[in-house]
Length: 380
Image (cartoon, rainbow, N blue to C red; front, side, top):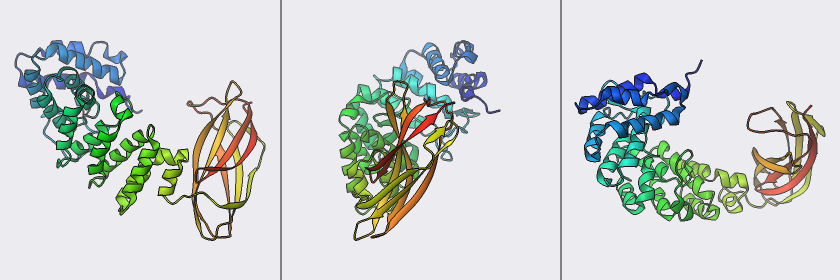
């Protein structure tokens, strides 16, 4: 049976953290820290366990942040370049210092107590991200002192360590999941884009993928801006940058953003005969919707097609809500036709409630709706 994720913070890990603190501060109350950090631990989930460890650090480390910061820095394990810092397999502590997930509460401690000590805090977050990640902790400083923190990140752009370079792109994501949002960057992402411009051709895919995820965040609020960036970056792009741009535009492509589609050669389709056929008009839950599509070209040249389909699910109030699904990329030859079929499963899942009633399937080609047909979903 798989070990619960929350057990990354367990009694043994907390004891190891305390041991390393005590190695570098002889007056550290190891038992008091352990008791506070382990209080009713089994009842807490991962984040709550981390927060409780942070609270214990606040209580038992010196009130002087400069002193506490030096203890934390000394307690870190030697730097390793073998594993990506977010990897779940990475140990929480090591015999010669703290590493991996055990750094998570330490990052929060720096964010909560180190705002008035910018230089030391940046040294700590730089050191921590080499051993785990500081993408959540850096946001305390971006929110409180954006200009000063951005200047620090600019100085790290050419760092030899890939984890530090990734921190720049991941930490500035305006809508990083499970993290504090950065409202100023949501409103004006220009300072972030300046950083991403330098990182777009980073030698590490690990960094480039983070750049793509940041741009995808920005696209949720500034779709045309990201489409324009994609067009600019595509000029002279090698295969690595092309992959980055496609991943950055994934939401825009799924939404049918015309500017983004054109970046990848998907112009407005020129089609003649279009036939969407549903094989069975009534579909049962845990069964399949089967449909086929036939399109005919009216273009004098070949066309690149990105074909998606939308299921318009019936809601409890009788209205429908759309969900886009990727289907196929194809080349439609001049004057020729293209035939394809699809089997879409209606399986009971925890993230969606299905209701009896009329549903629709809609076909999108290069972001354009070309056909729609209805079917009845039966729950019984």
